[in-house]
Length: 487
Image 1 (cartoon, rainbow, N blue to C red):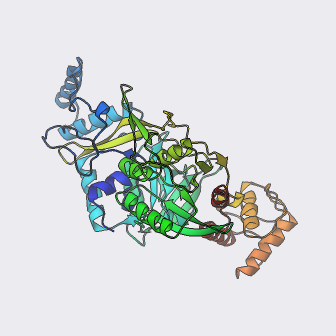
Image 2: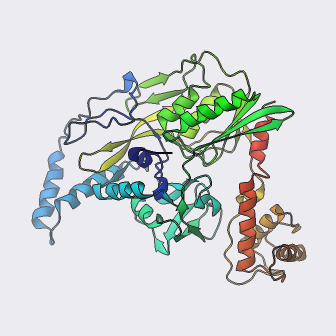
Image 3: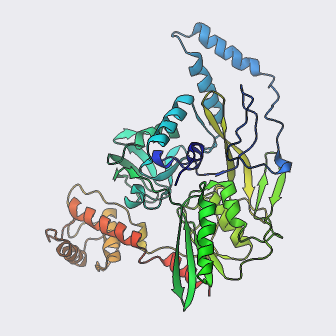
């Protein structure tokens, strides 16, 4: 599967483990210092939302900026390059917006990104963004090292190989995290609801490029299609439609669309998917500009599918995933899972003519009924959490955990052991005799020294088994409920 460079940068830069976690629309806009426009893979804007050819009135106090520039150049103690001041001014303007999705990449950073894109697709495979000033996981990519290591949405990255990322912008942090296949990176993670940060060691690898996966399951004797979308990238709609047609040819009687952990992507791609389901009498999305002008966008579909459909979401479902989920919800389909991330804005990456790029928030997107889910998320029609062990956390052991100890780490061990079928009798963090027996049984079954104590080796083995079980889909309560809700 071959991707164009620009799309990789816009979508998720999997090789670099950075994602823009957004819905994108290509716009025709005049670029500073050049006559061309950024039209590659562009989508024509709704007519009501076209701007004024990229021209803005010069502010009255613009001379203040020039005065500050001259003051620094002529009087500062040390020499300062023009480029340093100009780049700083751009970054400063974007910072004042307090919008984590509006960012700037200078020419050097863009060149490094392009070089990496051309050479390989390697990294840890997680979509990240800045959230409340913290480098935050939006979602790990399916079958990536980040997913295998158990990273989750909203995990905050504190350090990379023991170096703090505090004060760095997103791209500087990404530079520290990315790397060659086979190399290791140690991330210190702060997880919401967990008192102590913990280390996660990840071996970088090739990042999977497939974005659509499908299967057929039998529910109450009925063939049911399941399509999972991991991101909305250049070929996602084409692959989705192809696999949907294959499922329909097989005679499916219901469909589940799974966008859990899907951080978003290209707006025109999710539009092409929604055109398969939302009939022409209802807009599948609305786009609103800064002046409040709205454009309702419709498909040409005559009527809805003749089979039931449900959508699965979770806290890692963001932006384009939410566009899909809320549109399906508002035309009467069930949405199953937990509340989504809550990103309701649209960005455009605009080349600045010298190799640098500004990615700027241009629009809001609204649901078919005009609702804005930004920072609120989408509430499912059927709320279902996964089993408790899905939400357990890695445990770092300094001194072995033994009988009569208490604490958060022990509670996590108890939850994981219970998920693996070893009964601890409780999960409140008290290391009782039943927990000791469960630990011994686990150690015996996994060729470990059966002491009944939890050292780092035993804790690591428990965590590995839990991650394997989660990835197997064995106890996927959300998928089970989505399938059940169809009939």
